[in-house]
Length: 138
Image (cartoon, rainbow, N blue to C red; front, side, top):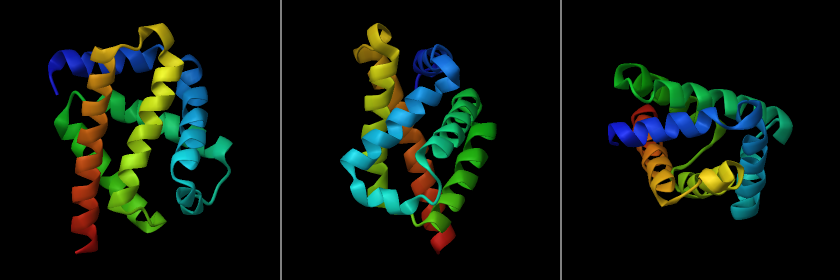
């Protein structure tokens, strides 16, 4: 990711109302629509999950400019997700659901450049998580 993409991700996330809680709720609705089988991976209600998701995403977005902070956080998140039963094929619909929710909540601020930045950020997170999950399973 370029420095300007990192800043776009951070700045856009900061504009989400309520710390991104409404966006996170839409993320789960999108995810369950795109991949209904993923609902079984979650033990808590979507509202509670949305609060946790928005807090975790905010922390990742804040840490993304410092690889030394970002990478261990994402790897630890991956190991937790292994215990939930997340598989590599689950990352694709998660990315789609996130981009869809962000686009809806960032509204007029959403453009091709911002979408590209968020896609790169998500891909970075997903790749690190899949690598850490694979290491954990081995």
